[in-house]
Structures are given as structure tokens and as C-alpha cells.
Image (cartoon, rainbow, N blue to C red; front, side, top):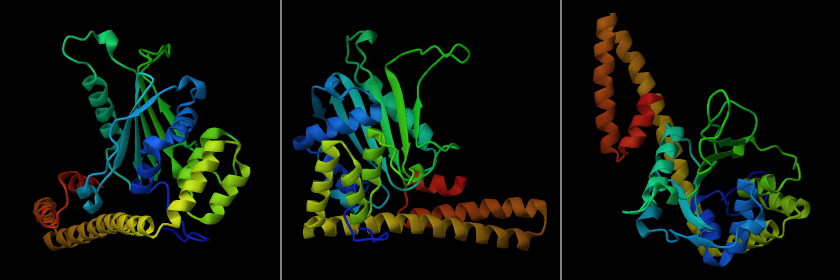
Length: 289
């Protein structure tokens, strides 16, 4: 839930709400319109969509550190859409690894390499990842000097929501991203009044319906609270680690002592974070920060 300068709504960028909309077999028109805009492919070229992982397992709701992804078969292309709210270290490398897994898993025993499908990863992220102003980064595999594309079967997209401008530019891509990023009823109203895309307006209606549903509102509230807890836990752990590191260094007073003190501190923090239930991935993120 949000109260950013207006009446609260359930936020589409919240994982459980995102999956309710874009993981619903009944919303294929909305999904097709969104993919057409983000992948910049003609809407008429999307004739069929098969959603491969629709259900959220019950234990997912209890996880504090999490991400959400939707895998779809779109006219023979594999499209993986991921919504990531909180910052995650090594996100680029993890996405590349994830793409390679999806791409290779499609090749069955006895199949020829030519049968591998076009595989695209779409990452919608609520943090800044690249040192640029534009919110959309599209990566291909190409020759360094000639810029010749090695294969059309590779594509990784990043959409950085925090780089969206306040004024709409009229593009379908930006209309969808503004909708995903909306946090108030006033923002929804502005999008509904300015967009020319029927599916965007239909999604606005669905968000209002979900915002009026007490059960969904509470589900969104508790899910968002867990994500805030994650951000707070990581922030506190970083500050604690830095403070203890400075104290350790002052106590040793010598370079050798400082090195040994940092090693001891590192081991102590790892044990403390493991005891608190943090995963190996979260601990690695804190140590590298």
C-alpha cells in the first residue's frame, strides 16, 4: 500500500499484485499489449501466450527476501518477466545466468541446436542499475567493432522505474511503466486520462477493483511490510558492520592488527547474519557493499 501524495492503492510493482494481473490466464490481452510495448514488437505478431508458472506457492508469502518472475511461451519465443523491488547485488550476472539456464533448458535430448528458441529476459526494477539517464537498456550479443549481431535469439531488457520522467511522452512503453510504477489514485487517474491504450485503461480498472478488495489490500499490506523489513535489515546490517569495523581498526592500531581484526569481524558478522536467517546471497551482498 502507498500514501505518496494521494489516496492509497495496491501497487502493481508489488510482486503479489504484479502476478495477479500478469500471471492470470484471463488477462492475456493485457499481457500481450504489455509485452508488445516493452519488447517493441507488433501487437498483431503475438497470437498465443502460454503462462508457464502461474501459482504462488504458500511459502512464498512468508519469504522476506524474494523476487518474482513469470515465464511465458509467446508464439514460440520464451519470455521471462521479472519484477524486482529491492536492490540486489550482482543483479546483472544473475540475470545473465538465468537467461542461459532458460535458453539451454529448452533443448531436449536429441534436438538440434537450431531448435533453440528465442529467449528474452525482461527485468523491471525499482532501483538504478546503470550509469545512464534512459530507463530502458536493451542488451544484445554483437561483434565489438562491426556491431554485427551474433544471434537474434538473445535479448535482455532492463527497465529502471526510478528513471521515469514525471511527464508522459506518449509512448506505449512509458504508459505501461508509469502504470507499473503508480502508487496513488491520482497517478492512476492521470494515466487513465492520458493513455490511448485500451489495455492500460483496463488494468487501471483492475487495480481499483483490487484496491477495493479488503483481502487483497491486506495481502498487499503484509507483503509490502516484509519488503520494507528486508530493506531495513540490510541497511542496519551494513551500518553495524561499518561501525564495528571502524572500532576494530582503532583498537588494533596497526596494519597487521587491522587486517586480523577485519577477518575476525567478518567471521562474527557472518555467524550473526546466518543465525538471523539470512540467505547466503544476502550475506554476500552485505559483505561486498
